[in-house]
Length: 242
Image (cartoon, rainbow, N blue to C red; front, side, top):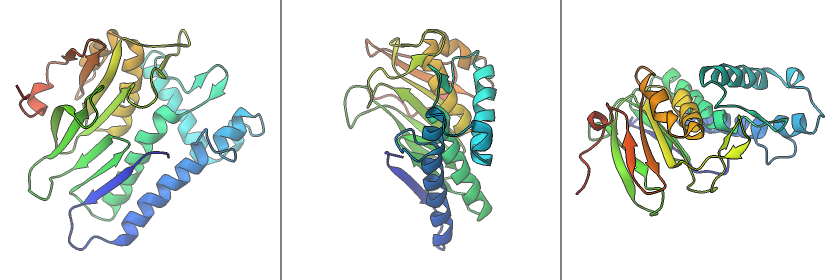
């Protein structure tokens, strides 16, 4: 997927088959949905060589999820821009969620899955404390803005870290520049990832949107490096450094 993927399971008897199954599934999703692979279903759909309804169950599921979240976000999350189908904003979170389902099926209760900085946690770390998940600083590499104490929580961030102003407002087709990063924290990585993208595209209205979603919080950093966040965020964070 062009990003680091880390799976950390707290179990002395962890079954290698479980990890192999997780990474096999990441590979399957990449081969199906990558817009950078000429033979992927997404690339073939966009070259009009393949109709979405003929692309198989995985693509059908992705299309349905994209339509669901497009409706839920008032169109600020969309996999269809300029006539092209690109579900990249959904697939990473979905891949993490599927990985967690595999690990759950093997009976693991304490682990995290991290794909490109988006994380789903379960249970506790080896120290029997919540997992520590950093919100990356949008400008200073190697520095975090805040640290989330996460047990059973997902943390997903959309921002300009790697690709610059690449997130578009689907209503205008133009890049959005209100935020440098927008992080969403909540129980489900798929929703957190989609909401992070959609709320970044909403601009200032993104925080109001998350404040109305039960169980989810947000932490956003603007172009002046000022942080704005929802009411419940401090309860999830380690104390900010002075």
